[in-house]
Amino acid sequence: ARAAAQGSDLSFPKDFLWGCATAAYQIEGAVKEDGRGQTNWDVFSHTPGKVANGDTGDVACDSYHRYKDDIALLQNLGVKAYRMSIAWSRIFPEGRGKPNQKGIDYYNRVIDALLAAGIQPNVTMFHWDLPQALPGGWQNRDTAKAFADYAGFMAGKLSDRVHRFMTVNELRCFTDLGHMVGTHAPGLKLPQGQVNQVRHHGCLAHGLGVQAIRANAKAGTEVGIADNANIYVPVIETPEHIEATKKAMRDDNAMFLTAVMEGKYLDSYLSAAGQDAPKVQAGDMAAIGSPLDFVALNIYTPTFVKANANDPRGYTPLPHLPQSPRMASPWLYVGPEAAYWGVRAVSELWKPKAIYISENGTSADDPLNSAGTVDDGDRIMYLRNYLGQFRRAAAEGYPLKGYFLWSLMDNFEWADGYGKRFGIHYVDFATQKRTPKLSAQWYKELIRRNALV
Ligand code: PNW
Figure 1 (cartoon, rainbow, N blue to C red):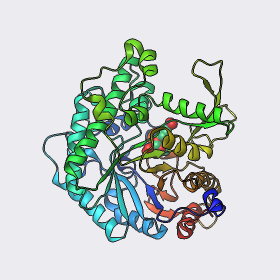
Figure 2 (figure 1 turned 60 degrees about the horizontal axis):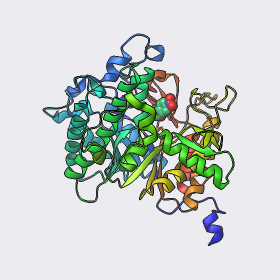
Figure 3 (figure 1 turned 135 degrees about the vertical axis):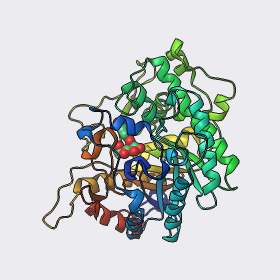
């Protein structure tokens, strides 16, 4: 038993849910088809200078028409699950109001085809493509309510076949990158008070969304969030550095996952924000803290942290250095320990019933070999190391239930356009031909064995 607990073999728990992930705007294309409404990302990507190369999601992987090809790729891998998102603007072109049956039909076709292939759909309701018609976007609190109405409506349509929903993807990205840093849609650089308000509306959308999904879905439907909490890793595995790690995670995610898991903003966040603290209405925090069936984490980059009695916080994060190892995206520092510590810290801090990895993967420079396929050894190296650390967390008994690799195939990588490739299938965007990379073969073998290879 001791050996099993320590995981002396390399296997994952029985029934571990292996999957791949994508998102609507990154793969679908067909942005004007069948009544889809315009989104913030349509506007942003068509604004000169915002996306590398002037790339847009107008065509992307053309999955709107080629979803059967995508499902064949999934089937060939042997995955049991697929994480996909729904384009809100296909369902409610104006963000609210009258639903568009053609949009609903599209997702029914995709979901039915997945089920026929023996693949369980896991659906994210919002992966950043916001209907442009919603006045003020995330600056307007009414957007949170509009989201909940849409999410509840879709849960009602799908919960006969979809048993796990994620409300929103990555609170920090769609709020901060869009409204503070300005590198994502809508490309704003707002003052801090307004940024904090946008963050609050993002959390509120999640919370009201949970309530609406529960009110409309079949009993037994699981609801959670897919979040990219900043992940800390203790420099040394001793009790003091481990405590520092958990405190850093809780503090640094105070306006996001911590609020969602605790139903409150930490005093340290509110007092540091001062005048800039978000305006919160009665009932907001209870909604934000709605109980979840699971937490899903997108895990990429680690931050190492040390306990430090001389720091008022009790800890000091170690900076990333120019020479710190990273993958092909400048923000993607390599630190497989983030996989273990992300799961462990979230588990110990908040005791969720279940944890899923909703994304993990990497960009890599993908050299074509003479046979015209891609030998992405760097990606395999990255995945093997991160999965080893996820395996450790599962073997030690943390409630890690599944893993969605980002991404099934190369796609529209937001501000990086098509220049950064995260897929385990290569997409030739001129012909839309999809080709398995070496990493797809590797992942397939791992799934077959249910063990690290
Ligand atoms: C996530 N950062 O995005 C998203 O959920 C995916 O849609 C995306 O394609 C994937 O990770 C790879 O980037 C992130 O700057 C984008 O730290 C940027 C950052 C993190 C995550």
